[in-house]
Length: 135
Image (tube, rainbow, N blue to C red; front, top):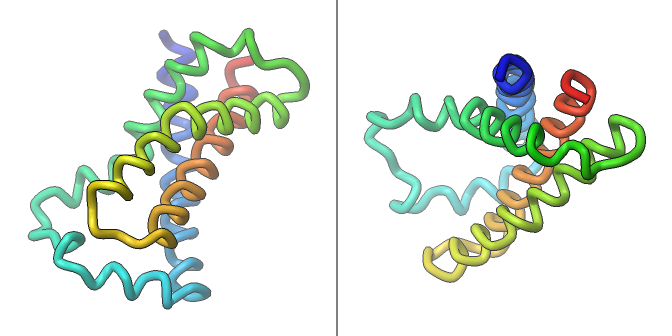
C-alpha cells in the first residue's frame, strides 16, 4: 500500500506540473484549438475548479493501483514498461470514453483527439514513473 501511495503522489505532482506547463504551451502554439472551448458546454461557475485541478492526483492514484496489479505483465526497460502500460490504459479506458464523449456531446474531433493524446501522454508518463519507483 505504501508503494501505491508514494508512486501515486509522485506521479500526481509531476503530472500536475507537466499538465499546466503543457496547457500553457498548447494555448501558445495551437490557439485555434482553444477557440472551440468558447462553448456553453465548457462554462463553469467556478464551484468545481478544485476538482479540475485535482484530476492529476485522482488519475495517478488510480493508475498506481492498476500498475501494482499488472506490473508483472510488462517486460523490458522501465521506459518500455511505462510506455506499454500507458498504451494499454489508453486503449482499454481512454478510447471507449472518448468514443462515448464524442457521440453524446457537441464537441469537435480535434477536441476529442487532443483529450485522447493528453490522456495517453499522462498515462505513459505515469507508467514510466511507476516502473522506476515501483518496479
